[in-house]
Length: 79
Image: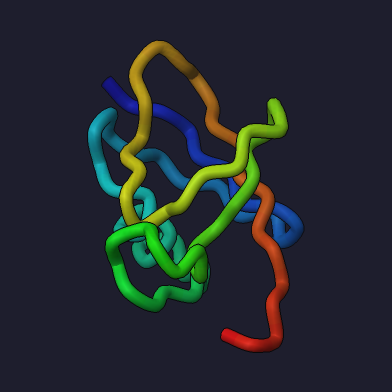
């Protein structure tokens, strides 16, 4: 099943498979999400979903049961 993933604020949209790693989706879309530890501990890859949930992209996959997933990217000059 495909899910439309939309990255804001640049409004980049790409289709992704349920279960696909968000970092892989972002990479395919040409969207940069900073990473550090790749285990979720450092919070470098923190993004916000449309509903306000804060997630770490390095340990999160595209969830089932949605047609579209909107991801708000943060700008953190330290990464």
